[in-house]
Amino acid sequence: MATTPTRPKFELKMGPATREAYGQALVELGTKNPNLVVLDADLAKSTFSAKFQEKFPERFFTCGIAEANMVSISSGLALCGKLTFASSFAVFLCDKGYDQMRTCVAYPRVNAKFCGSHGGISIGEDGPSQQSVEDIALMCALDGFTVLVPSDEFCARALVHRMAEHNGPVYMRTGRAKAPIIYSAQDSFEIGKAKVHGDGRDVAIVACGLEVGYALQAQAQLEEEGIRARVIDMHTIKPLDEAAIAKAASECGAIVSAEEHLLDGGLGAHVAQAVAKSRPVPMEFVAIQDTYAESGTPDQLMEKYGLTAPYIVKAVRSVLKRKS
Amino acid sequence: MSATLVTKVTNNVKLTPAGPRIESTAELKRLANRVRIEIIKMIGAAASGHPGGSLSEVELLAALYFRVLRHDPSNPTWRERDRFILSKGHGCPALYAILAEAGYIDPALLPTLRKLGSPLQGHPDKRMLPALEASTGSLGQGISVGIGMALAARLDKLDYHTFVMVGDGEIQEGQNWEAAMFAPYHKLQNLTVIVDCNRQQLDGFTKDILAVDPLPAKFSSFGWNAVEIDGHNFDEVIPALENARANSSGKPTAIIAHTVKGKGVSFMENNPKWHGVAPKPEEVAAAVKELESAK
Image 1: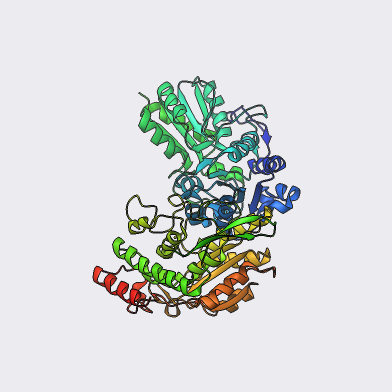
Image 2: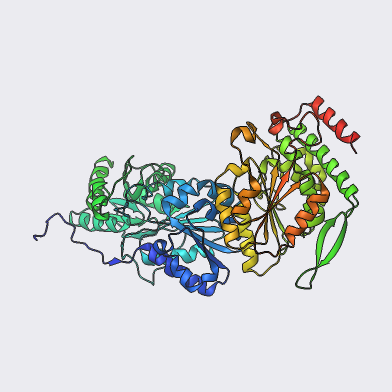
């Protein structure tokens, strides 16, 4: 097969899915913290909480297919001093457990942790009923919640440890699909502190989750055209690293956001708020427009719904036209 | 107040405070009457609130806080205390009045119910009042939270018991039945659900909205020990709660307590209008007069 000339030359090596890193980190945490309790709602093999279940069955509770019950049980355990991590598919955990997240966790500020796996449309063939495209908006709307979207296995693993150390409710979105390797075990991560790749001053691309890989591909392609972009891995959506955003707005003068989530209430919307508060600059948004997706392979869906590197490049070109 | 602090030997052969305790049923009845007067006054002063479901639960709460729960008002965060969750959060005026009687809160706070800045929020809010075990008000979630507490007790090898009070209307929420399946499966004998079965909900009588009967059969078919009692008769309430506290059957307990909504105030009894309407000043006066004459 002939090489397509427009295809970005920059390729990242694929690593495991962020959900696998979640399971691995739970085992690491469980080994050093006997107070850790893990819950799941009949998707432990998919969320990888089953890794913890294998090692620590006496501290693992499967709640059956009953997410609302699981969220409230987590609250009761946490109110008695247990460190709880509860997981399911993002769409079921957040949407079916939302009132419980609000009443039993958010407003009483209960120290419970949650992980929604299979976030976004890259879950693929299962189709829209299983694809969470609104979890970031939902969870950011809960007062007191910290919201994390790691980009690769190293980021996810480190952030699970930060979740455990953090006092307060935290939600992490993980993905089903394999994620490109961006970091190494030597990289450190802090909640609320973005990772900045490059110091380009033409445009800043703010991305989270799988979009960070696409953003780095776009950055490489733009570099060949003489456009110098910086990529900001915004693994913490809430609290947002407003300092990194303000710096990017002021140094680059144009911002593109990229996320595997609905445009409404997602990363781009939160970045736009921060930009409007600090230094208004033109922005473009790579996100799922006001629609649900469909069945298909992850690659097909990311392409069809406009989330791959070429779409980020296109968004950069349009934002640069508006840059003063 | 004739309550006295006593000590109790636990399974760990450790002396622990057991909270205020009232041995005499006559004295408990007097306390219940005082609590009812406070409920009417508080809701009247707030000009909003839920008198009917507060009045129906008074004997159940009085028996819990003055006879059954192992607790220590001077140490509300005592790790080994029994837990109580009022899942039917709108019934909180009764709980606040009981907490004042038990010494958790200053009785002078009671007239601040539902007022800006008061810890006595319209529905129980743990942020404002640490003596509460959980924030409630969105119905149907308390049993699940109680399950979490009962699991924590088992994991930590502590022998505290968790009690959760729900309303019979509240039982319509589906999450209760997720919880009802979970607790017996995990043999949570350290969990007790009390259904304040006052036969009414906001829009009318439960039988006319969505019938919940037969509750004992529903719970027992899910694997609970289900018992039915008169929820206003201390001679039935106290043994049922004590048996649940001492339960070693491997099953959780469901106490279906038959109660009268608006109990003690004749014009409120069995009238769904008083689910969530505050008495006007002249109605407060009439209700208080009736309750005082019943002393």
